[in-house]
Image 1 (cartoon, rainbow, N blue to C red):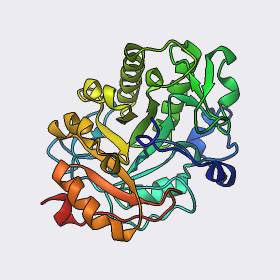
Image 2 (image 1 turned 60 degrees about the horizontal axis):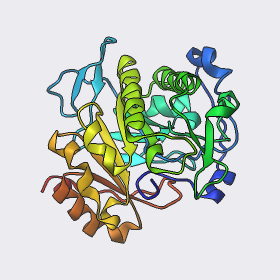
Image 3 (image 1 turned 120 degrees about the vertical axis):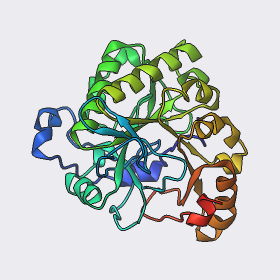
Image 4 (image 1 turned 90 degrees about the vertical axis):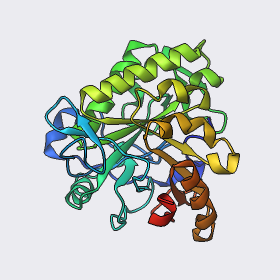
Length: 309
């Protein structure tokens, strides 16, 4: 839903095209995910950090089932989201969120070496033509264009080939040393997708994705329509929403904060907007970052006193 997920502007799509470089361990997947076009994405982003050592750690963590505790952000987790431009790794935050397809192995390692966690953004509900695997989506599963972005199309996520491609993306995230993924665009039932998708269909798909993430030891966040939030609060590990303060609909995410799960909020503005927004986010128990709409390196965060009143 526009305003609740991260959406690309047409100029950003046209102009952001950094080269994608993979480490040697990703050679098996390189053929599927070679760089293509723009790497700006819609949705929430993730970070890369040292493994947590116990369930009692400040950052949270549960056994991932693959030998290391899974990163579980809490309400006081600080973060940076950057989808365009040269990645600025200097921010002293717990979590960085970056585009999976634009992820540079050297950047991931640098963040990890500095104790940051890494979340990787994936649009799981739409087919983006600038992604290297776009041609692999079956034509029958590509639906109507998004209202604001006619080159991007909704997907019929009931299709098994679509699910296989999304599973491959999650495997790429795991192999790329992402600690977490943001599962974005999970609201086709509430859009003119071109398919008879229901709320139940979206929930089934979301739960399948969450299980696939957890099998790979990936912490999973969701960016979705408000009517699905409460139903996903038990299985999802955290959530991301955009402009809920300005739109006055942040209450939809209280099911996450009530369970001591992070709700990451993006609002758009400047440094001068941060004090008032931080105060409101702190009252709700959410982790806020103020960004420019380009989602570049600029970041206005909240002081510790605002996050922990």
